Amino acid sequence: MHQLGSAGMYFVTASTLHQAHHFKGKERLAVLHRGVLKVAANFGWRLEAWAVFSNHYHFVAQSPELEDNAKSLGRMLSSLHEKTAKWVNRLDRIPGRQVWFNFRETTLTYEKSYLARLNYTHQNAVKHGLVSVANQYPWCSARWFERTARPAQIETIYRLKVDRLTVPDNFEVSLDW
Image (cartoon, rainbow, N blue to C red; front, top):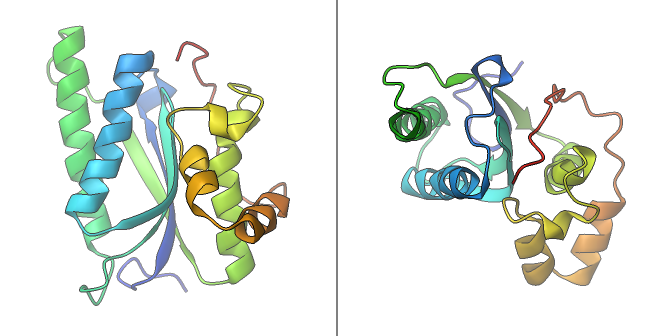
């Protein structure tokens, strides 16, 4: 049974309320992207894959080594969501609007499940029809992964099928990025 308090590798998906496209456009996506990377680093989470969109994001991350649990995940996402909501509400001149809805996290305990979710996250922009090749989408980790991983790692991960994964990802994304 999964317990959020257990240390390890996690797959996280978060979405905006009513799947609203609050982060539509290059500037907003860039801010959310930087926010995900910065807040994860500040909380000691090691991101291994990420993809950021106008109304949701996914990431695969290792919980902090120095913690004996992963309870900081909720605090980390609360910090990210609070900061990005205030920023986008200031831009839209709608103070106090609820921007974020919820997040789901899954502990990854099997290697194939972990590798498949890495591939899923890297390929998510392709799945949503935003690009034809994952490394063309600027707000995901595919380009970084392809630059830093060994060719055998890239081949292994990109070869994994993701069609049997149970990931709630019926988001209609904005093509305006």
